[in-house]
Image (cartoon, rainbow, N blue to C red; front, side, top):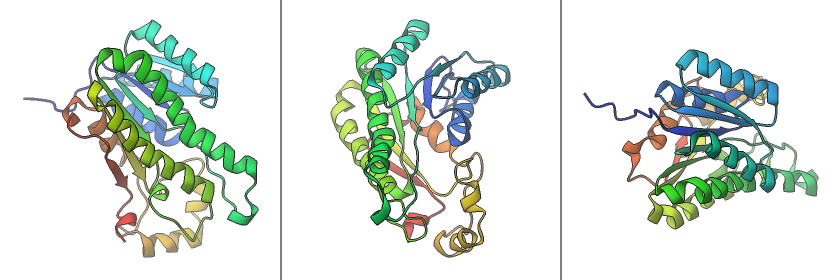
Length: 257
């Protein structure tokens, strides 16, 4: 029997891997046999995540503290990964932030910060990994975590910088897919809908958002833990070798309406 989604021996880098969806996706890839590099800013959290994954899934792990707004630190992180493992097969660009405020009140710093982390941060990681690991190896899987808000606007949580940044991630994904296809590197994006995380729980649990889910989401609910995992596994797998430049909403149908 063939296991189409076996990732044994592959090295997967996951940014924003200290809490929430990043940790869930890292565990999903570890479950398929991938070695996991957890990247985030908070040292204690990623070290705990890396240890838990190593203990549970019996795969090698590495925790690297890195601020993705620093090109120097991103390059150093990729050098450290290559020194340890000699390869990087998969990247999940999950690190991000979100400023919520009426557009007319958004400051320059808020807008710049959003673009710098969500879009430019993802580019810094992709650029370094492609140059130092994937282009030389003529193989790679890059998965950018955008958002359904990168595809549509919204009236319930004003966050124009987030829409702009995630929309940028969506089309940056297409641009990189077109450019790096000749190196056998696929670049795809996942656009999650409403999922619980430490950043979203309070908002999603509000009566207003609960009612909004019934109206705006065809499946009439938020995403559950684990419901992003199979999309990440599929796009990370050698089996998805003819899939690139794809923007995959995992949103309960939100963007279908």
